[in-house]
Length: 233
Image (cartoon, rainbow, N blue to C red; front, side, top):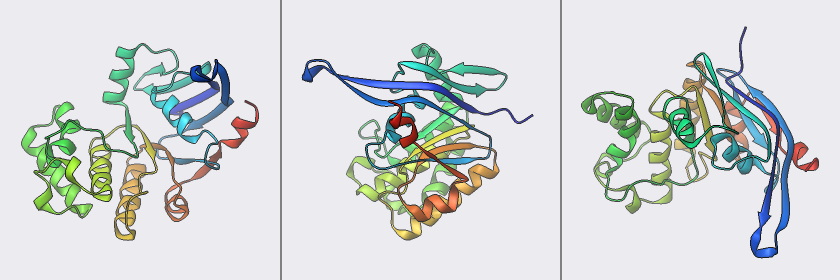
């Protein structure tokens, strides 16, 4: 039986606007879906529908008001909605990867080390980790002269390629992606499409936001319309 890697059930979220006298802004209500190994699913809907909020709730950046977000980690199931911070950190380190829109790294660390760090954290020897990081950066067409430099000095598109490489270099059974190709040209978008395809074939479950329709059509098996969750909120 193919058990889901991710199972979202009855999830609701409301933001409280403390600078507006406690006004409440409902985002989603009763959100529910499942994600299987080797499947890429897009969160769809217009801007403001709650796509990024759903993604952040799955990753544990936003707490939920109700419901469950269950992630399978080997023989154990972890509920992100109720997990304590230490358990959530372990889940992210071993099972759940994330490619955000923006690169957030320690200043003055070179791009090659930034990308290699997840592998080093997994116990891979640094020499092998940096070699694999270099291969991935080369594939994403980041010039080798930039590899020793801090990504903070790069253009938006260059930073995003470092971001993608860091997010994809280590194996994580569940991968979250927030507009991974937003700052990329056509050639590098195709590289990312190819990399996502390889992750799917390796059994990785991918949940993402893909505003680029061509990329979405190329990599996604189905689209979840988040507006259906927003209507109930």
